[in-house]
Image (tube, rainbow, N blue to C red; front, side, top):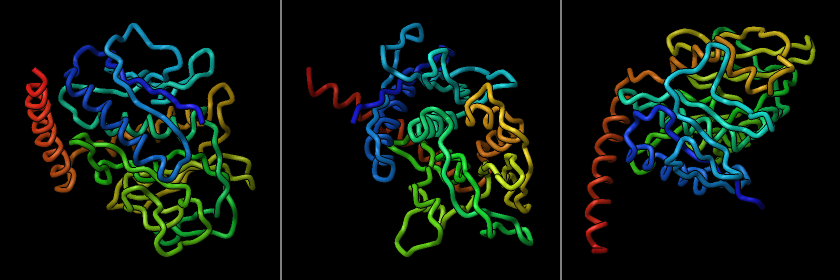
Length: 283
């Protein structure tokens, strides 16, 4: 099995170098330790110090200041090789979750068109439940559980939860994990702050279930025909609804989210001090 190489590179020139490097190390642990437990692949993540150099064979994940209105995070270059862009600022620590999200989804579905057939879902009295039909779901490994509240930390760096292949199982089975952290409890469960997209072959159109606000019921909307000039994921991620829920999911509002990022900050300082102390051992 060939090894996919991903490179994290700061295009803004404003993010702390040590933090970007620490994030790359944590993301490398995620894709070498956590992801392969459920998704068969071999990948590494490295820090790219020079934004003007991308080594051969490396898929870059660029930290940028802004994204154009018609773009999402996932892209393909002119040779159809995947890369990603993540908005990052010095004042918003959630960019590490976004970087994790983009990397995980890029590895699970490198070309943005992976589909998985599974039981249809519907909303009945404000609750998500299985229907009688069958949908073709776009495989986006983090969207159903993308809210900050479901993130976890690696060496103090906050990273995204992700679904396992069992997410598409026909029914619940005891002892099965449907997302890495266990936040998702059964097949096709969409957590508050998450969403999922599928093609409904009965009407020959794409639809989305959006769970934007946990205080309100989720909704299903038609989003029409896919844009044939883009991969499915590029198209989905560029839609205004997807951008809106992605932005909402990155807020730090709840006590659990505040505790996560407070711990993350303390842990990163402790790991930095440890690295300085360790370097002294080699003098």
